[in-house]
Amino acid sequence: MKKIAILASGSGSNAENIIQFFKHHPNIQVDSVWSNKRDAFVLERAERLKVEAHPFSMDEFISTDKLLNEFKKREIDLIVLAGFLLLLPQKFVREFLVVNIHPALLPSYGGKGMYGVHVHNAVIANKELESGITIHLVDEVYDHGKVLFQAKCAVESQDTPETLALKIHELEMEHFPRTIEALLSGSD
Ligand code: GAR
Image (spheres, rainbow, N blue to C red):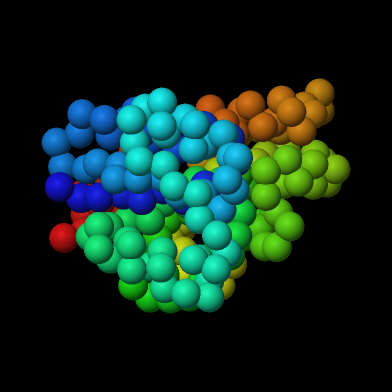
């Protein structure tokens, strides 16, 4: 059985969707959900779905190897960043396969400060005709690793950041779990 650890900072709709998708999967399971925010809704969602949910401190994440060692002990095969807003320390990328979802067509609209609604605000402000999602491996440079999958949606003149967010959300729900499944099915 391949094991996933999900890292998330916010609402957790992607985390929930991934948990549901792999609930009865023969080869892949969500082991646990981890958040840098003690009150993030993602922790409640995970608990409701009977998946272990853990907040962690910056100390456990960065200064010590507590979280890293926990993932090793659990024999995690893949770390999934699902709305995780901190830069992942390099020690994780060296030890684990890590995948991230970004709500735009990288390399456009990536980098520091480009997350959630900030991305959609920038896309609308620049009158882009299309946006989309990028699912990519995480390497040591922010929003940079190998692109595994992209899907596009149209940005129409009447779109607002909120309506664009809904289109992006639909793409994320449809494609993120499947891309994770393909990634883990292709790795030994
Ligand atoms: C998602 O749209 C994800 O693409 C984005 O945060 C949202 C989290 O929503 N990630 C980033 O912006 C990373 N740079 P969720 O908490 O409901 O899954």
